[in-house]
Length: 400
Image 1: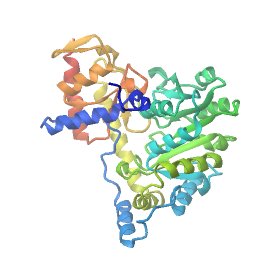
Image 2 (image 1 turned 45 degrees about the vertical axis):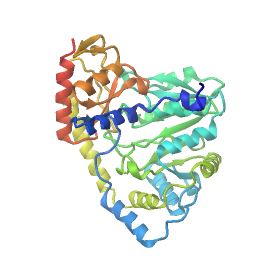
Image 3 (image 1 turned 90 degrees about the horizontal axis):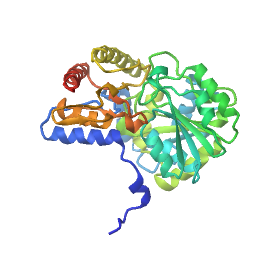
Image 4 (image 1 turned 180 degrees about the vertical axis):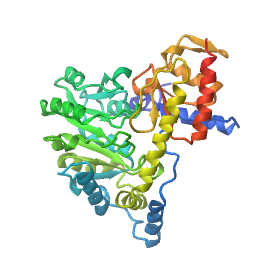
């Protein structure tokens, strides 16, 4: 019997990060001591002043009705002000901002509004797992350009130029990057912008969701470069830098035509994001930034801790992440080996082996366009990280 389900859902890959997190939770419910390093979720609590803003919004009783589809005006104005003052996106105004239910929702809205059947979208790879699936869902064709360990996993402007065709509609990248933690420099982004400016029908989607977790100084925004505001859709949100994953608030800053299209799309699909969460987000972006700074300092400390532990594991090859909270080591040294009844042919097998034997959940690099790697999230306590790396070292050492 043929399935009643649509081809689009049958052909869609499940999110590998969520799938591994689900497996880890299932094992935990069986009483197994699993350390989860698979999800990109801060282990910090949402800062108190943000929580209090949400409580006040409830007590005021003003925010129980449908919010404006594009978001509350004062939040949009605060986001635009932030982008002008902190990101040097001088043209940003409230009318360019659309607030959505997380940055993932923002990206889906953008592609739904831009992509026609057969349009090509260049993805800087390794890439966040959902980019390619959202593009395909919209009828587009993902075109990957690959960065390697030797260049800190950053594909180049020359690689971008080499794959452009008349069908290219957009290019998307993240910086700081999920899954690698790499950060594009001002010079690297300027070079990319010069390529884009040669192709007037192509847009850039700049995913800056990890902007606040940056260990190398300033995070540069593509939309701030000369001639690039009208060519760039900036995606950002509150999940990572403000530890607000469950609040689900993200946004775009885009040229007016695209912002209006996204608002129209959102009006048919979800309407506006949750009112109370938007009030919390306003407190986050307008209020005390010290908690976000403290979280970034803690992530840097954890990065250095994990870096030292990874370098002590024979066979692991890694670069030094410059932001976000991930390592993305090359693990090909373990392919073709076996232990405890498990044969490791690839990164998928290695993650399943480590989940079963070390009781540590990671995510296969294949989901991010890099099948020679695995992603390790260090958004966990130092105690958990030390224990997890101890287990990983033991289990990997038993492969032969």
